[in-house]
Length: 355
Image (cartoon, rainbow, N blue to C red; front, side):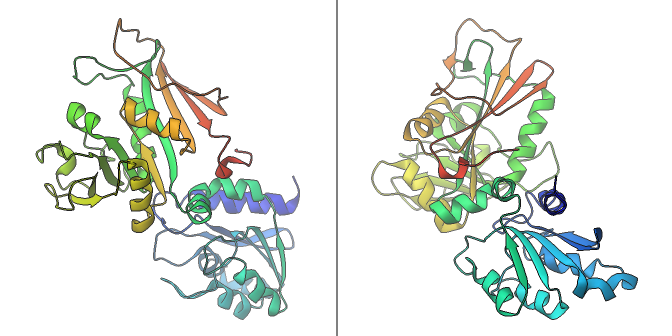
């Protein structure tokens, strides 16, 4: 691995620590290098908090600050050049005297979109781009999908038995995954902006859809209920997390949830429209089978995480969603549970290699 790739990999490593805390901002890490030695590093820790470049420069020890103008700044995403929650990072970089900046990806956000790089170059700073660009896009796949395709990054998740059963025909809840996997799923929830279920799952399972098993922020709960058939007494309509009822009938709230009406019968478009309006950059779809299958048939999905309990083999039940021919890019075992990750090869967001 080249030195530039080594330092950019460290940027991505640092950036990942902000997962679940910085959205709708991207995950960004920064490393300052002088004579092949890291003298400062930082990452964007919280939405509204200082950006990675600020943290990096502030973390340079006092006795090394004299070397800042002679050092190279590595950052996995183009420095911002606009006023948002914080001032432009390009201003800070120019003021610091840094003469070389290495970037993995340009920022697709319209207020940046190459402007940060142009400002740095106009100030006489050398800018190198494209170092570990694939890894940078994968790290910020939610951010890139949202701004390039104007829709959220969509993850489909379900648990099934060894013989492909996802639920009980009697309508009662079927527990398939083990406690370790359940905690993993709650950690996944904490990484996404929203979580979605259809009305049949909400009615049959009465799920809370929170991150109660792990530390982390609850995602916004989305419920697709076209005819408003659900009871306001369900857990999902209580105040544990923000909730939105997506329906065809009315914008009247239900329980402690707000309602969003979409036109026509295309509820997937309704989900996308609401997420775009609410700046929700990712959605974890947890069921049920018909809802998951609808996303698969539409082609409007990016990632599938399928959990299979290899020890469970019921005689009957609701069939799991059927997949087109796909190859898992990652597999993991947790006792009897096998987790497989699949990517949608037709989506632009997945046109690069994963790690």
